[in-house]
Length: 121
View (tube, rainbow, N blue to C red):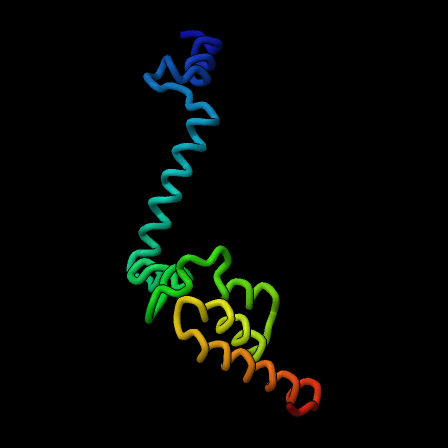
């Protein structure tokens, strides 16, 4: 075998019983492997065992049909405890405790007036 034939054999994968993998095939294979590796890492984790905390609700289903979950709205808008409770109770009053939740909204709004603005009822 000449040097040229030897070099071509070394370069040409088909001559050695191998096929050249396309970039798309490589990326698909790599993505699949990454997903498998991620699953191995996740196994035994809290999220794997119990699901994402933001995807479940403890004690009822009064937030399940909301277009925007109150907790997402509260966090994204950086609301504090008092403001967050106003959002929470006003969101659920129709499907949970009715008048009691409206009274809680009023109470938390009054607390905001007192604590943030120094005003009483």
